Amino acid sequence: MTFSSSSPKRSASGSRVRERGVAIISALLVVALSAILVSGMLWRQQVQIRRIENQRLLSQALWVARGALDWTRLILRSEGDTSAGITYLGGLWGVPIAKTRLSDFLGQIGEVRAEQGAATYLSGSIEDAQSRFNLRNLVASPAPGVTQISAEQMAAYQRLLVSLGVSGQLAKATALHMRAGLSQSATRFQTGTSISSTPQVGGGGMTGGNFTNQPGIEDGDDNVAVAPLLMTGVDSLLDIPGYTPEIVAKLRPFVTVLPTTTAINMNTASAEVIAAVVPGMTVSQAQALVARRQTVFFRNVGDVQLALTAAGVQSVSIDPNQFDVNSSYFLVHGSVQHERAEVDRTTLVYRDPLTHTTRIVRVQDQL
Image 1 (cartoon, rainbow, N blue to C red):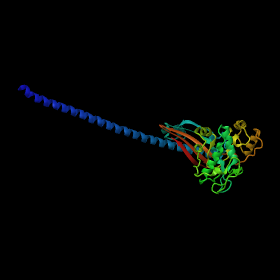
Image 2: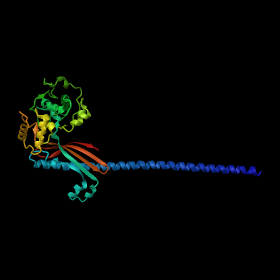
Image 3: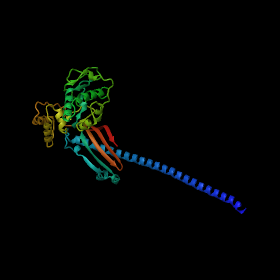
Image 4: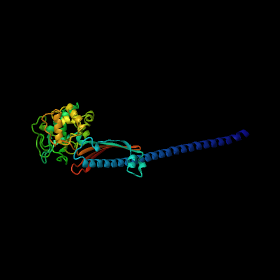
C-alpha cells in the first residue's frame, strides 16, 4: 500500500519538471527570436545611417567640385584678358593641378576653417577642346535653313581614321549620322566659325534638297525612316554601325563633339590632327611642326602659314575659319576625393572670344 500510494506523487512531480523545462525552452526561444529581430533592426538602421552619411559626403564633394569649377572658369577668363587672343600650351590654363589637400588652398587665402578641408583632395587639368577634330564640322550651314555635309572635312576625318589604323569608310557613315541627328535639332544652324568656303555636299535638312553627285555620297544614304539622336560626345559614335568600344577608345584623344563648328587651334592640336586637317601633310611633317611649336607658339594665322611652308607643305592656303591660334571651348577635368566620396567631373566650358566671359555647356560626372 505504501509503494502504490507514492507512485502518483512521483508522476505529478515529473510532470511539473517537464512543464518547467518546456517553459524554459520556450523562454529561450522567445529571447533568441527577439535578439534576432532586434539585431536585424539595428543592422538595417546602421545601413540606413551609412547610406545617409554617404549621401552627405557625396553632396559635399559635388559642392567642392562646383567651387573648383568656378575657380577654373575664373582662370580661363583672366587668361583670356591677358593673352591677346592667343591660346597656347604654355598659358596658365595649361598647368595641371596635382592631387592637393583642400586645406592647403584654404590656408593660402586665410580661411579660418581651413582645417575642415584636411580630408578633401583636389586634382584636375584643363584641355583645349579645339585641339581635337570636331565631328560637328562634318556638317555645315552655308545658308540660313540649309545643312550640308562638308566634303573637305569628311576627307580630313577619313585621313585621321586611316592614320590611327581605323577604316576610313567610317567617315562617310559618321557624316551622314551627324547630319541626320542635326535634322531635328534646334541648334542645327548655329555656327561658331562657318566653314562655308569648303566644298559642300548635299541638300538642306529641312529644305527637302537632295545630295549632289560628289564622290562617296549617294542620294539614297539620306533616306532614313527615323532620325538618330543628336551626337553630344565621343561615346555617341557607338550608335554608328562599324564602331566598337576599342575604336572609340583609340579615337577619344583626337576627336570631340562641340555644339558648333569650330576651327582647329594650331597651337594646341596634336600632330595626328594637324596632319589630317592639312591636305598633303604627313604625320612626320606634323610632328616636326609640333616640335618647333614648343619653343615659339603661333601668334597669328600668318605664322601658321610660314610654319607649314617650313615643314615642307606646299600650296597650302590657310582659311581662318578652319585654322586659328585661339580657342573658345575647353574641357575641364576635375577629381574630388572627400573622405569616402569620390567625384570625377568633366565639364565643357565656352569662353566668349570678345568678352571672355565663360559659361558651362555640359557636365559629365563619374561618381
